[in-house]
Amino acid sequence: MSNNLSIALTPETAVEAKQEAARAAQEAAQTPQWSHSARVINGVNRVTSRDGSTTTTNTPEVQRGSSADLRDTNSTSIVGSARSAVGNPISASAIRPDSIVKVQGMETRADVAERMGLIRRTANGYEDANGAPAPAPRQQQQQQAKPEQQQQQEQKPTAEKVADLDPQTHALVNETMAKTGASELATAMTEVITTGGLSDDAINAIAQQRGEAPEKVRADAGRIRAGFERQALMMVGDGADKILPWAYQNQPRLYEDAVRAHVEREDPRAYDRVKEAYWLSRTPAEVMWSPNAAQFQPRIERDGTLTVRDPKTNTRTTWAAYIKSRR
Image 1: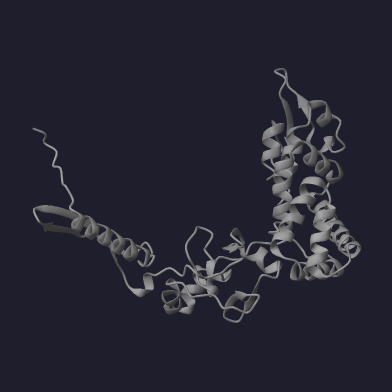
Image 2: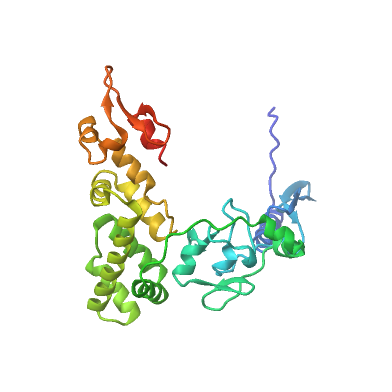
């Protein structure tokens, strides 16, 4: 005799079971989405006995929470998606340049979204550029309840930024970001970094969106690129005319990261790793014959190691250690 319990459903119980399952599915579809603070209660089993047959149905697990635990799943606000640099939801008044927001499903920094004209700063924090205020996260009331002095102490000083471009180019950049969509700007940025220019498709897409002639868009793009290139040469300093082309050819990913840090985050040290990689790739002969060799007195030791004199400490060290110490 088998130990398995076989349950034969009559037509009546089969219909009842289907009805119960349909009701359970409908209840599950209408169940709100809850945040991580909601609690889960065990599901409920229903046993029905009829004409000697037993039917067991199960309702979905019940989640308990307050209305404050409900997620705003319909929100399309950019500011409403804001999170801190470590991933915690924050209010509009707590957004900092390095905070993270979502633009068309893609994450970017708040300062980048602001320069693109997608969000703007107000007396009460940030709001979407279309004027839609951000929905307040659950933490906003708690944050507003903190003493003003405590909030000021929690705010870290803003990192140093690259100096603005010349006034004409700076104005052109702001105008371009305000009149061009986020996806078109992202495509243009990637093309310029990876190919050195804009394709006809990218030019035409931006021109159509802005209602301008492709020739004007191309001319504006050239002026903006030239402005950032002049700024990059100043940021890199000595040897920039060799370092940047070398990075573009030999370290494309490192070069792309540096340009994005320069243009999107205005990081004054954006090209530090590029310069370091360039100098570490030099051969001993190139170091020995470099124009600045007299400053660090390069020398090849008996074991073949290239050493230099560190001008700051007046001690000899390896070439690699010297370059890394200049970060």
